[in-house]
Length: 101
Image 1 (tube, rainbow, N blue to C red):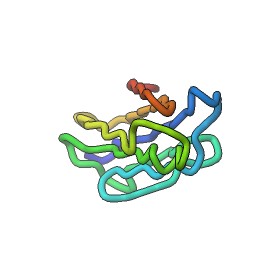
Image 2: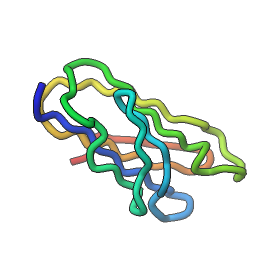
Image 3: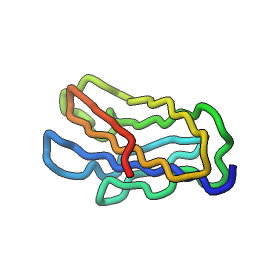
Image 4: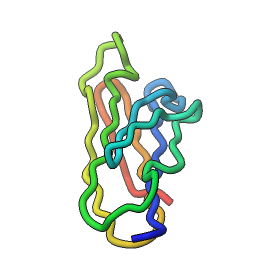
């Protein structure tokens, strides 16, 4: 399945800013979000069709600040050779995601 890519954008909605330096793992590859909370390509190459996990280590981002979640794991279904953008909105006690563009 050549041409499929996955990106993410992690936003700290409680602080009203991008979540920089958050470790995100996809396909066995871990990348940190940039200063704008983004990773433009998590795939690191060709993505096979099927289920894939996107694991976001939000506990490392929040550190010693009280928080509920250590990781947020999203199961993605890759079916087409297209771009999949998966934003994640986080706060110490909640999270939300959606398929972006």
